[in-house]
Length: 106
Image (cartoon, rainbow, N blue to C red; front, side):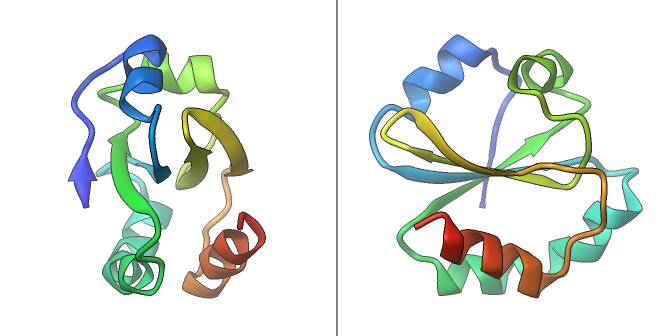
């Protein structure tokens, strides 16, 4: 999974302008993020049509504010530069919930 360097919304928009992406918002201190992280390689394997990018919330706090990411772990799907789905809340997420979200995002 690619790790996003510190960036802003405009640069992120350029990066995501072509293709289908899943942004995974997380932080090292977040217990719910640590809960889902072990499942992420398997989820990536199952959803090869997506490019997964991990976004450190603390390193990209302004970006998270601009995107309305108020809880982590959270997931955004982008298709050709446009947000097409979001799974954003402060709740713990299971592998099954993330897969359900990605199946609905198609």
